Image 1 (cartoon, rainbow, N blue to C red):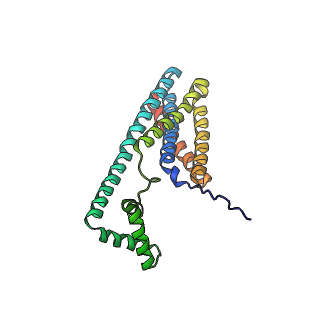
Image 2: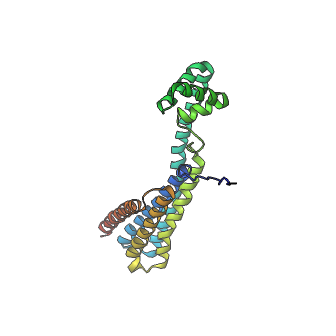
Image 3: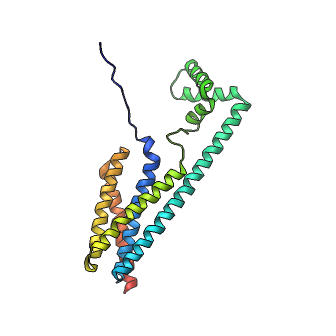
Length: 231
């Protein structure tokens, strides 16, 4: 007798919320802190001043990322809650019209009218608000906004990213600090781009080139500005 194998699918969409925040935080932590370090070093500052600036950038950046991400995702969460409340009110006031609306959605997705009607009725009998949230509004447990999760992921990942150039500062002599910081940061950015692309199921090379370009550009401009003001 043939045994049925368990078919377990692993999709990337469930990771997108925290993945986006984590990648953005780590990338920003590396780029902003490394750029600040390179700019201050190019201005002729001492190792102690450079390290102090880097630590301040880590703390301020992590808090800024957490606050910004929380506010942004909270606004999305509030919008989702308002849409759900309106949908709940519409279901209570005119159930039949909501059934017709869901039926039209399923017809538009390729179901025959009679089957679409049956599906709409059965899903609404099971969980009317859930059916409309998922198929009309595009809101589900996988895609729902989670402000606290996004804020914590952003803060932690920013701090982790910002710590990398700080370690380079502590280990490098002042004369080699700029090239060491730039080189290590670019390598870390490439690795981060590849890992995040693979985790999200995207093209690794494109992601790596993208972060390499913008990271190098940011550090180059900041170094130029620091050298000009230092002179």
